[in-house]
Length: 209
Image 1 (cartoon, helix red, strand yellow):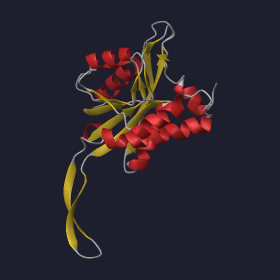
Image 2: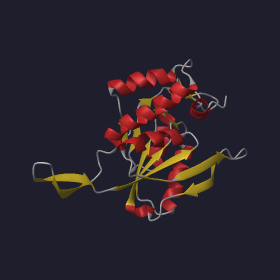
Image 3: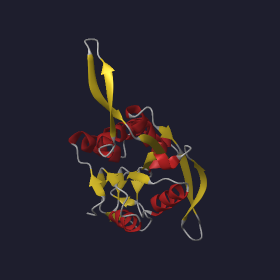
Image 4: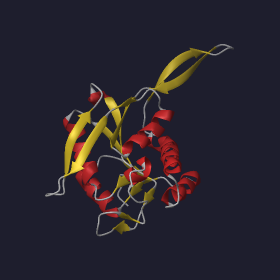
């Protein structure tokens, strides 16, 4: 496993992952599971966040505590990343949210940007770039390229399911960017789907197939 890859194997997450994989899980259930797992992942992906000391007053008296110092921006890759972003926002409600849209060129098969809207001064934010699936890594690499060009510097990539090929490609291109995932699956099949995976995350999230 690459040095920048963090595999989250908490029992509760693995339980919910099994339910997500099940083809009999309904769209409603699948959407709820993705939100719940993304929220649970926050505890790991936020470990490197910085804190600041503050003085507060409890009902009994004054004391000192710590609050988050980092400004957080969550950037889902459209469309499947949207539900993951919702789960993270439940835990970090002050986070700003941007969006990046990519499509695959039918001739080159490479991802092409069609939409990007980020918070102002993105260089000042810790960015959580989220997408449920890391297959070949092409979309993640393109998305990072785009948001880096916009000024983002502190980036974490967060996915649910990853393929060894995608982890290798992304780590090779951006070895300094941490990758968080809850499963490293076996391989990609001839159609580029992760095996065993969980199918097309976007279709399962939005009931479009």
